[in-house]
Length: 504
Ligand SMILES: [Zn+2]
Image (cartoon, rainbow, N blue to C red):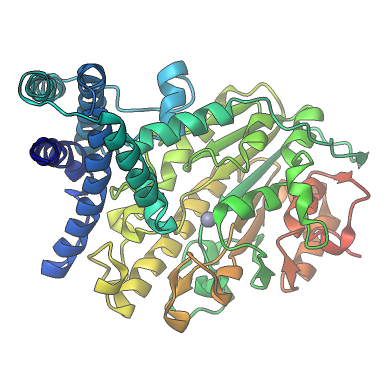
């Protein structure tokens, strides 16, 4: 009994060290408010500290295992904590990919003496713990301890699905999960059915730009009558149409994006799992295709990213759990360099934005944070409704700026820019916020289309049809056929009912 008590105390001290050095740095910069905010963060840290305790309990049971595992645990934990704190970088599947290939994204690859000192000190602590485990602790009946602690860990880990998601974002589960996701994204792609092409109009030069939005809702776009002027730039543009009445079946990114990219519709939603996307059609027809993303690989749409010739992730080391700014304008330099370097006259650019994802303020550059007061805590309930709305409206103002800047690059070309958000967002309706769970406002995504003058000259009937159709009601199913139709491609029996460029 005394042995067990001493062992528990030993693991408690070790997990306190691991929590302070590997977990706490994740939270040090989170925007929170006052005592209650700090308390909430403290609770998160304590819950994640529980994970450290249970895992270390298992790892330190056997002194030989401890001698191998603890230094590695410490090395990885210290290195990830350092990067998290110093560079706001986190372990993501893409980060693992970058470490193995160093091609697809950019990461803070800076080695510094501070990193070596921090990792070195933590290694030293790990060695001291191992020495203590060898010299001072004896523990009998280790198998019983092992059984009980493994069972306790599994119970703790699967107790609550929300907490499990959070635990998966923190050390060491983030390393495990990212490795697993990395391996799955490099697995053989699912055998998918090709899209059957029926007819293609002859076109010499054309740029099709598809922008996948994030959590932007139609009724906060001023072009649709929202009383706050959230779209001052797009409002001045000609050949620009807002589609105010789009219905999205899904309310989260992972379900929605595959639906948007494929011919899946409300009658056959499962087609998103078995068919190729419009990207493959453009690739097959000789377009240069690219996927430029401010979000992670998502396991539901990895196959479609692979359909593009080029995939670029300017913020590969960021995840939505990192409370630090990163912006959609980071997608523009890759667009510029692709535009400068392409030798093809026909191009498809697919941009996956971070858009209006929480934490709103961190996806809007300071100069565009014009609606105030804004949120000052990542804990939603610490903000007033007005703060939430202001911060959200700033993300639409930023969308206005981002799309306007993107469009300006294509003004002198034969080009179409098609924007559709993956879903909407709840802003306090029935007490719901963000887009966890479900709510009507999450199904009303913002949608916009712009075309250049030379596009209108090439396809006058399409430009005219869009004008007629823009106020109509569509499900997001329209995107697949309309993106193809914009390029004069008619596929899979082309469904004019859902083609915004068609007079039917
Ligand atoms: Zn989303």
